[in-house]
Image (cartoon, rainbow, N blue to C red; front, side):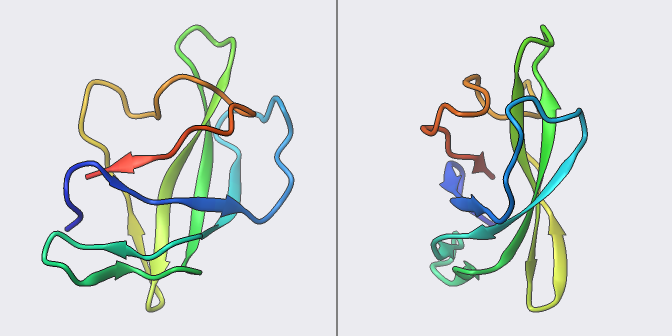
Length: 102
C-alpha cells in the first residue's frame, strides 16, 4: 500500500495529441522509485504504466489519469480517493501535474 499523497511520476512513451479521444490509452514509464508506507520499494523506476484520457466535467479539456502499473509481471490497477476519479485541473500541456494516489 502506498502512503496518502504518494507521487507516481511517469513519462509518456508515445506522442499524445493535444485533444486525445476520451478513454484513449497511452503507454508510459515510471520515472522514479515509489516507496510503500512500510518503507519498501513498491514500484521500481522503469516499471510500465498505462495512462487514460479523461475529459473534464465541462468537456473543454482532457486529463491524463494513471490507471495501472506493471510490477514483476503483475498489473496493478490504481485507485484514487476523493470526490473525483481524475487528476486535478490543468489538462494536457500544463507540465506541472503529478498524479497523487493512495
